[in-house]
Image (cartoon, rainbow, N blue to C red; front, side, top):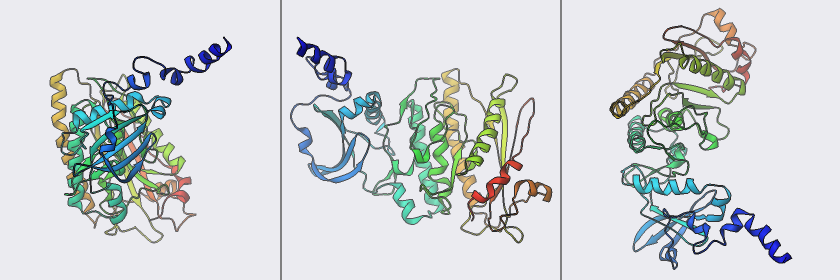
Length: 419
């Protein structure tokens, strides 16, 4: 009897151990049905292992061959997935790729199944490797190539949004290039299905690229510029030591990817908190009861050196004053929803050409603040540091309000990256 009691305590009271005892199909198998059919035999042995490609939290990815065709085979541990409460995540991942994989810029997933202990996901093998490696190798990419990649990513994201999918993990490592150099979006582990009008407030993404989310596809909106827009002149690098990154603050509907505001983030905690505070205040006023839901925010960037103005060199990005008009969007009908879908392509196209035009304007000289303003922003005790100087101003329609970043920035100069 004591043995029976011990068996009950160690097995039936532990969900994972209990899942192994279910009949006629164990829960470790039923958990993943119907997305992962249970196949008898060793189907995975049909695939010849050509080497390991990558390693993730739940398993590994292999380059394999079957009947003369090369695939990528992801092998995942069911026990790890169950213990991390990620069953729904994995099922959504394979379902999204199965439904959306016919798009030319999304990796297709033709086969997936489960054995007693593992999940198997077969997808197309993309021979060109990661965009991350291309950026790391060449640093500088031609404007024409950047525009091509941005356009292809925009089409893929718009397609996903129209299908009710938010991606939430856009980064160079998740963008592959095929043999012809076209984009292929992979890894839908953090993606999520959303029904009409729903939003998510989950903060997610890879740690190096993570941003604080506000609405449905904030992760996509916030990383879109980071991936490509400002890599044309090799200014920003994706390493743990990198001090600058590009992000966006956007207000989006689940089906749209409105990229509203580009800003510079410094690794300095004080600068980060300053920017967050200013943007948060603007956001609160924009969403307030007295607001019409419309407003604008601008960031002014300056550069200075010890003797006079700092002239932009060809390998520097010529920052201008970015003033962007924002509008909160509430879509109440399918007609309104469709109308805003059609605007996405136009907005992205305008942004692409605007960025390219500004980046090519190398003779641009930034506007400098007046001397009294400069004393508030620039700390002259560090004359050899050439920082970015900036001001933030915002206003909303109706009750107007403005603010600027001044003395709070003074302490940041020593931490600011020199050019």
